[in-house]
Image 1 (cartoon, rainbow over the protein chains, first blue to last red):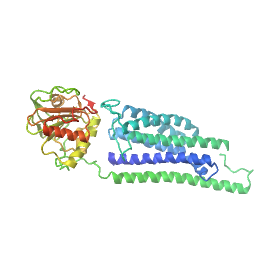
Image 2 (image 1 turned 45 degrees about the vertical axis):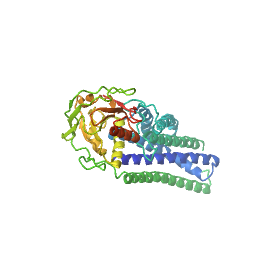
Image 3 (image 1 turned 180 degrees about the vertical axis):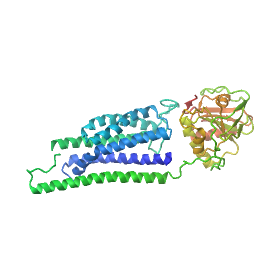
Image 4 (image 1 turned 135 degrees about the vertical axis):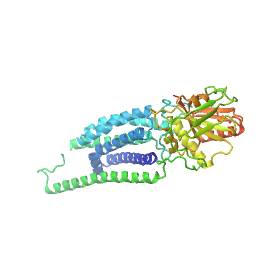
Length: 185
Length: 257
């Protein structure tokens, strides 16, 4: 696998994560409208694997980010580092939470993933529409505007991070909602 | 667990509960199975799509541009001899004092220690300075190579690259692997450890382009990433000996050392 193929792979995974986050959002709305409908069971079962799925995504994002910096030699920029600060702990803590089946962890996961998502939105925007300043954004050696990856005409590394953060947020939402559900029944 | 059957439940309720439970665990497996399948499909699709990549960089072979991919060899520094007066350091913006002044000639070596000479005069030429660690160079090189592959090496303008600012401790080292990986087909001189070639051409940041006319005088200089249009305009200024509209602008660049 060369860097191009790996990037295509990660880009596809990020689109799947994004679709998963969107589907979870739709499921949440449907379930709210019809709490006893056939989809309520799915919501409940998604809750049982939410921590696991979120951990898998955080782990993939972390390994992918390390692959890009250590193996493909892309220098992480400042904004990349801030997003890493939000993602790397999740790879560890979500694993622990999934192992302990501790869905109460969701609130802490949301805190990290929300900050990460906000940074990723800003960074994705920067890469999609680079400012016309004529000089490098961030630092000269590692400009935030460098599109190391640009798959399908819109998937950049921060876009992948954004997909990951959104998916984790969605899973944390499911975890939070189902932990309340289980406590009350 | 809240949905464990209790003694208070009627048998039918218990059956329902058990059904729900088995349905539930089934669905969990469905979800996990779907995730596995999706990852596998993405993996296969990526391999299928990325099959034509450039993982095995082979130097010295014919390039689609009509040139030759830079040769194999693990040299990262060359021996550079510069003759003539060094150009003023490029400042960007305003009028460039070096325009119209003669460039020094450079004699040097490439990755396999064979000679690369950049004569002062002869044909119009563009000398492009890159550093392996410079992200703008990493973006620029494939863009220009794509243009060369599509349009062929220009017959009326000589192209040269100088790989400069090389440092083992910086990313994307060594420069030879990088340029071969991109199928780079422009003759490439390796700057020496003192950066004599860069100094002689007045480099201040990467990537750096110097356009020289047939008499060996500077037509224009520019630093920073070029769009394909700006690259074509640069070629045009080499042919005409006059600065085009878009050159002289300074795009995104990485400061030298």
